[in-house]
Length: 621
Ligand code: SER
Image (cartoon, rainbow, N blue to C red; front, side):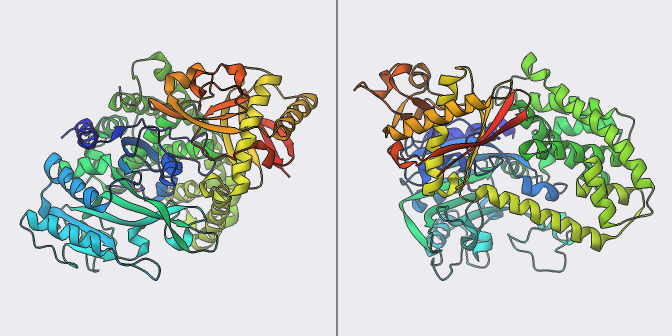
């Protein structure tokens, strides 16, 4: 079965059950300050899972481009990738378990033709606050019974604690920040069979194999989250006003199951990329474990890099750009490991174009010059890193053993990410003080984690009052910049914590102090005027026509949500002219009801973000 068939069948299946198809959000969520990348289908839907009305209705379906940086280290086995497509369906307070579980079972067994005997399921075993999900157990028992299988708990239906069967963006209930939605989930696993010996060959050999043991024999292909709780400030879980279903299943994995091959890199979503790598290295995929792993890393990382570049990202030393740089550099190190006569920058280009062909018409127009020209961003970064590698390697050679301090120096001086130094040194047969290295490495990881946690702290994800106010101030700021300085200024990024807002805007010089002062004054004036904030739903074309600001690079559904500040007159929101409001933006919220509650607005600083993009920090007091 082709991947495009799986994608199409899924969308059609849910459309015929009353779901509206919504477009994939960008992988780089420019207007969601809570995270660097879109890592699941539900992420762009948070406001709607929390109760806001979605313009497309209460039943949604899509295929979402997703990237999980936390999985970088896992890539190399048969099923982990950083980039994947998540097929998703949602009930926003509409249907619940009784519909969701039978539907997904029907989709997997009838549409994909998976043998029910090879499907195993898991449900939440319960904890002090939330009971065991016996309702799902009963539904699964009946579904299996209908196909002649006596599904017993512990044999076919497995119960697990929150670590495995609870889903929120931050994991188990204890880890959820206030405001975060989550709930128990029920996963479906496909059994690739004991005959492949995947368990015995894995790190889990000797332990009892079960659907969630991570050895690779069982692959999780479907996850229905019953998103019905929200974490409270006091640490408890409260039932949401609506019970939601949030379903996600990896397209790559579903396709692997449909083709009964546990290696997702054999699917047509990877095959042309692997072929390019084979040609580069003059080696065959699947013949040598270490080389196969290297090929998988190259394939996955360069695919993810292609998607990021196509959304306008450049390799950089901060934020998303740093992850992009790290992906490309790690792929280059793996190219060195693979060896072969090919030119590395050419392989980068070949993979870029192969990715274009695989997703042609879905996410890219592979033959458009706009697409093909961007391949140079990837190949140039490879060339740049090749130069860095050369000097860095010379430095590496000087040391017989690599201490944590040497590794740190390499990181500082050459931009060698930690794991690259480690891999390179090992490759050269150099001794590495592993313990010390890992100590340093963990310290570094802790720092990144703290930084990542900082991004969550008070972000829109928690919908705290302080963040919500800064979000409204953010809209006022963008409108003020456009009105006072240049109407062509566009938002290029944003990040809002409870303490401050940050906006990236297109502008090709430094703003002067006078300009910033004028902008600050105008925002404060608009706050004093206590303008009403109005949310309206309207057709996309109407929102474009009234001049609502759009998120750069985003695809929008046919009906959109628009937030308007200072709407005057009594015309319907979709009928106004740009002069009849102060600000209008395509936005999912949340916002304050009136600007008067915001307090005093101050611009803290302004600097360059990247070429042609300025970054402004501001706060409310
Ligand atoms: N949010 C869940 C996941 O990412 C299901 O969509 O697995």
